[in-house]
Amino acid sequence: MKQRPLLTIVMYHYVRDLSRSRYPGIKALTTSEFSGQLDFIQKHYTVCSGREVVAAVKGESKLPQRACLLTFDDGFLDHFVTVFPMLEERGLTGCFFPPSKAIVERCLLGVHKLQLVLAVCEDAKALLEKVFHLLKPHRRHFEIPEDAELWQRYAVEGKYDPIEIVLIKRLLQARLPEPVREDITDDLFRRNVAEDESVIVDEWYLTVPELKTMHRHGMEVGSHAHSHRFLETLSDQQQEQEILNSVELMLDIWGQKPSDWIMCYPAGSYDRRTIDILQRSGCAMGLAVETGVVSNLKDPYTLPRLDTNDLPFTENSESRWLR
Image: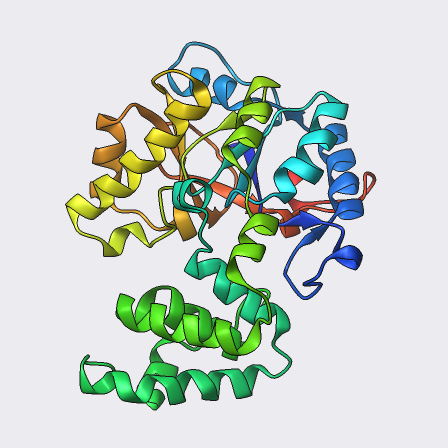
């Protein structure tokens, strides 16, 4: 017998008025779409706090029927300017997961540099050719497969992106050696994004005072690691440092040592070592990016989520996830 969904976790990133954005090509949810989706969620679900879900994980309480958790990744300023007031107006709580390096060190992360490059890209095939061109000198120092082999290994049609963009993302986010990824991403950023990095940082990311304000008003702040690296590709020591740095940020925001906190894996990347570190560090549950709803809480460190695009943007729409 098919198990009924116990919990639906929805994943958000950018939420902004794209018509007034300097980068309208960024893959964002518009303010009106977010409002419509909240209408849909409030009609069909009961929005819970992270604390309520953690209590259910620990067996201290039960979740209501059609429980829903709203999660916001990457520490964007959108979350303070747009999301926070809209949630508060409706009496809803959200869980926010900022990467501590972006917030504390005020630097633009490689993943977001790449997103900006893609936002201004008009020709995906030409951009991929540029990536392959920039790879050539690195082959003198690193064992990197030839272009045709990289295509064969990693080029697949994406759910929301054309095949060339999927390949670029895979190469520059995980599949190439880290120094190569950083060098090529920085090069593309300098060539394609006509703005000083420090200016974008102030437009892009939350500050610690803003996070403290949100926390004081009932929003919840968890971990998105430190620098948004793929955790499963790191050594044990690197993984631990990524997590402990983010715990330091939570300590500052919470005003006390965080306990029973929630981990949101950067790009959904984790392994058994990650979970071991989390369990030793006071983490109660971990959020992945695999598409699905939670049917039980027996494995709280690998909870699936729905992307915002998996749910409707109007109140009276139908959704297969309600069946």
